[in-house]
Picture (cartoon, rainbow, N blue to C red):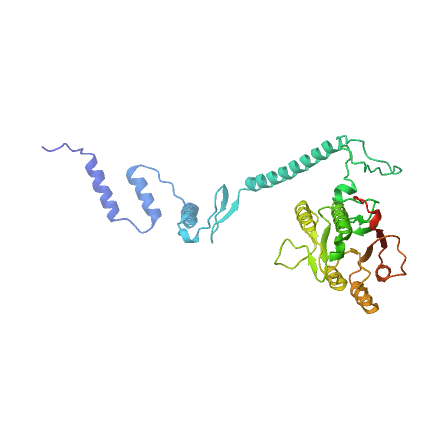
Length: 364
């Protein structure tokens, strides 16, 4: 089925194709011909500004696309800087992104540290204020007040007494750490004592009075000593017999504690007089232990120490500094001249005492 045709349109179509085939090279002539042929008006633009604007817009769009592509392109994990935790600010540049810690986080840390420091200062200040408000007993002394020291040993005393500090007995006040004790009226002061007593057969005479009295005086003297004092006991005849509860270890000075004093009582009470007399060996043994005080007791005028023996003991004592106190037992009033015991005491800073056995009493 053929569609109807418009008789008026055929001549126009033919004319258009005819005009296209015959289109001149000059645009102005083309536009004139078109206006004349179709009855329409065509505006002629003699300027190229529209072309330039279009080109500029395309260039700007292209540049924007290139910039966006370069700044968002993925560069790989190796080039990325890592930031641990928190919030960071990223500055993307053409070379590499850089990270900045969240300023608010840094400020928060600084603020926290500052607040802790302030809290500590406030707490210290509060403690100082609290201490300043404490009322101490008695208050503080002024500049003119005299110090008060209570040495009465009462329960209210804030300071210990000398007796408590030294744990010893100081009969006459004494020096720190020293004690005064004695036998048969002779006193000695120190912290290391040695008793050198004769135990020869003659000490058993007069119904055993000499030995019994010597034992009583010695044991009574030991009760003056405290645990920080030392002592040793030597009974001698031809040979010295030294108190040594730790045999076979060499004998030495022992502390005056209860255990040692108990052992000493057993040793002293077990001594029986016998044999001859040798003063020198016993005195040498005593000086070898470096005591402060020696109590030297004998009932014998014989054998006497010679001048050389006295010099030997005195020279040995020069390096020790012990006081050698001499006690002599006898019967009746002493009528003799100055004997070796008096000289020994004089040469070694000691005292001499003569004891009449007829006047012995059971206690010192």
